[in-house]
Length: 292
Image (cartoon, rainbow, N blue to C red):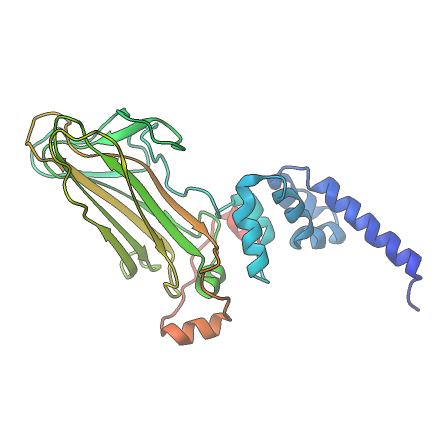
């Protein structure tokens, strides 16, 4: 026998109130403690209600709400805790932690990289500092593991959110410089390049205005199999002056987001058949494995 309608409405109100109360708790608490209380709490936290209430109060979670509107199957707790959408996945983008998270390479004998204060401000940067190159090519790179950051294979392969990369570069007033950016979307083996973007703008002349210029690119409809992003910059001065007079780079970013031009949702099998590539599952950390 079915429960009376008044009883059903009462249950719905109770669940709605519970979702509202839980939405004020920290995401880690929801995923690792509240979810274990009972089956009803687990089912509630595996669904969208609590997370959507929480995200609507946070401007930084707009990208997650956009994903919720486009993707019927989301790992809600994973998105809520690790927050891979709409944030900068590049670590230490302005040099506030010196060279932490970056792999450096410099050619020949030279002074190498250095971190200095910005000569002109960059709006929205987490710090007003920059990486400065020397008189021979100085290169640094960072490899971003998209699964460790909180994404998962089905989302990347079937829905293919936009991968937006950007960088700011400039020079000194009294010295010209050269700058190059290389970004590659890599497969699980970290070698196969699924898509690539390169920027080689004209060198800045000596006696420039020392302002920063922005380079940006959006990877869209790139196909299945992407698991890493390689972000590589390099620069040098054009006068061959000893010291640090070369290109200055800062506020590097890689952001995953959905837009109206993102690939339409596909069934994973359809996406793989269309592009003729095989998707690869990656091993997950204990926390990521728990956040289903």
